Image (cartoon, rainbow over all chains, first blue to last red; front, side, top):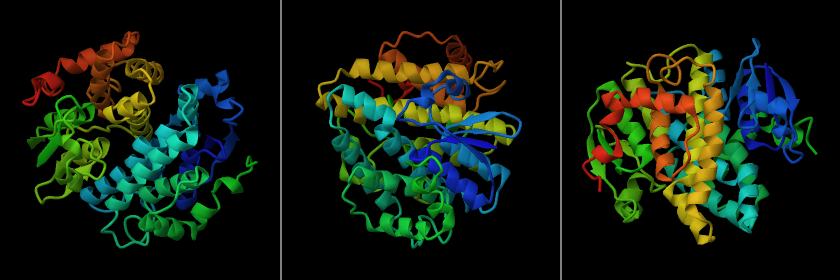
Length: 206
Length: 206
């Protein structure tokens, strides 16, 4: 397998975490987003959105959308499970994940920041507002959970999604005021699967 | 079960389609978005984002995020499957769905249009641009599929996500130039599960 990504892309980090949790190995191809390498024809032929990550499987099939890639990896390597428990628990893990995947990250990713800058909007203000609204909801969604991870005593897809988003929040100087989310992040970053896959540890980090 | 929704919410329509495909029945509670009923304290206690839909299960558990709700319904009522096939096929169906759920719909939903209007941006221009970019990618993702549905001869989660998004595109006067997507939509709307759950058919339609 080859993971097409970029060190600072939080969606790429999600997939790196899952590969590490599952003990799977993949080659890496790096596409420098700020240099526009994800918009080159060769990459657009792999991923028509021009987004990272993409995952090339061993038979050359290209999978796109990070959450779909994470669930694919969970299906081909079921242990440890990203979506443990009964259907209600799984739905709650998915909902937490989708708050990030649908309502936080795509609203302030590089594509969107370029778009809003074109309208004269301050990127930082935009990102901080979107992230804070989303984190308020996330904190409530796990308010009754006992931890140390988002849903129980082992990391799930929810944790995979949260940790890169927390790092993005810090990059935008969001004032961090969500104690449950902070505790979950700390529990995750004590694990090599999260810490060793962080952007700063990547070969293409600047 | 009780589905909390709004007739014109495309995310609510997704869940109505899945309930119909599965032959499941649910009561409906209506929350008028343009009147701000989704921001009332009683509803925020159910759904901390104040979004529709939410699904209350028979034991009172509240599930949020429409795609998570669709997958929950797929797990408690597996037939017909929303995610048929091998892990690669399932990943492709999920990726198609997530282009809509992550990169199209949340960028032009009511919450976002209010936000951009606050910055003096034309809502229609914003929505048309986001939808067209996303549809270009979707058309490519199913270019090699033979239909009549997005992935094969029966509707999947991809179709559930596409049909409401096509309706939104028309509402924003997007110039429709995606023949595969149009053919998929036509195949879907020939089925009662899609046609009878359309916004105009709902009790709260205006």
